[in-house]
Length: 489
Ligand code: UN1
Image 1 (spheres, rainbow, N blue to C red):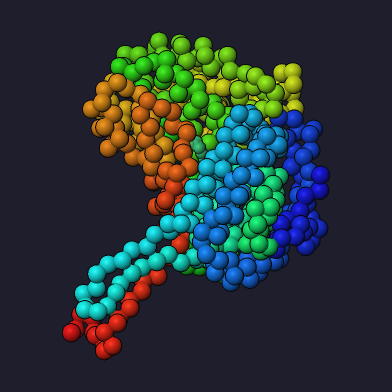
Image 2: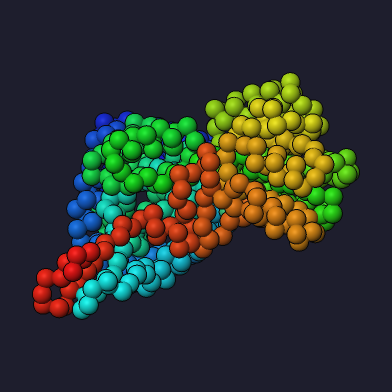
C-alpha cells in the first residue's frame, strides 16, 4: 500500500517524495505500506488549509458540528472490525484490545457531540446597575496534535473530537509506528461531513512534529508521548506562547493489602501489567504487596502469568502481543538486564523467538521480586511486559512507595477496608486512583491525566477536555445608556 497525507480533503504525497515503511511488529516481513516522510513544507500546507477552514468552521453552530461528530461515532461503529484488524496489524495488541481502543473513540465522539449542546459559559452579577456580565467559550484556532502509537485511535480521538466540537481545526502528526489507523480516522471524518481543511493528517517523524510545534499559525499543541519529548515541546511552547497540553509517562503502582480479595487482585495485575504488552501510560509496572500475603500472591500470580499466550494479536487465543518496534525491544531487554542486576527475576526475563514469534518483537511476561525504591526498575518507565514487585508492612508504607515516583498518572489499591481505601484516595499522588480495579480502564467521559512528570495540569476526557480546547471571552453589556466606571462610581 502507498499511503498519503490528508491535507485540505486531498490525499497528498510528501512534497519531497520521501517515504517511510511501516511493518507489522508481530512479523517484520509483513510490510504494511509506505507513508509520506513529511517535512516543514508539508506541515505548512496543512496548517494553511486548517487556518483557512477555521474561518468558516468556527461559525457553524456547535450543535451542527456535533451532528457530524455523532455521525463519525456511527461510522466508527460500522467499521470497527475492519479498523481493529488494521490497528492490530500495525501496532500488535490483540483484536479484543483494538476493538476497545475504537470503542473509546466512539464513546468520545458521542460525548463530544452532546457537549456541543452545552459548552456552558457563566453569567455573574455585575457590581454596577443595568449591566450584565457573562463569559463564553471561544475556539482557539489551529490545534497541532502529536500522538503515540499505543492507542492509535482512542488517544487521538480524545484530542481531535473535542477540538473540533469547540470549533477549532486540526493538523495531526500521528506516530510513524501507527500511521494507517489515522488515515482511516480521516476517511471517517470525511464521510461524517467534516469539511475539507478542518482535519488534516501529516505523516512523518520528528521533523514534521517540530515543524508543527514551531509553525506560527498553530495556536495549541496537544501531545501524548514520552516525558522527554513532551518536556522539550513544552519548553518551545513556553517561548512561542502557545497553549500546550501534555500527556506523558507513568510508573503506576497497584497496592495489595493483606485483607484483599487476592484472586481479584491477581486478575487486576495480570490485566494491568501485561495487557497491551505493558505499553500503556497507565500500565501497572509496580506491584506493592503487603508482606503477609506476598509469598502466596507471587506463587499464584506467576503461575497465572506463565500461562499467558504470547503471539500475533490477530490470532484467536493470543493474550499478549509484541512490542512495537526494534528500539522498544532493545529498551525493554536492557531494563530486564538492569532488573536482573538489581532484583530477582522469577518469570520471563527474555525475548521469545519460538515458532511463529520468530520474526516479531516478542518479550515474555516478566516479573521481578525484591524490588527496592532505589532500583531503576522501580523508578523508570519501561513500557513493556515487566512488573516490579516490592514488599511493605502497612498501608502507609504502601502509599509512600506508590508516591516515591517521578510520575503521577494512575494507581490502584486492593483492600476490603473502606477507611484504608479513602485514606489512599486522599493520599496517593496520582491523577487517577482505582479501588479494587487495575490501573488501566479509564472511561471516555471522565477526566484523564496525571500530576508530577506525567502532565502539565490539563485533563483530557470528559468535560475537562473542553477547557483545553477553548479560550474564555468575558463580555460586559452596559444597558444604562451612560458611562458607568467600574471600581470608581
Ligand atoms: C494510554 O495509555 O495512553 O485507561 C491511554 C486506559 C485506557 C487509556 C490508556 N483507556 O488504560
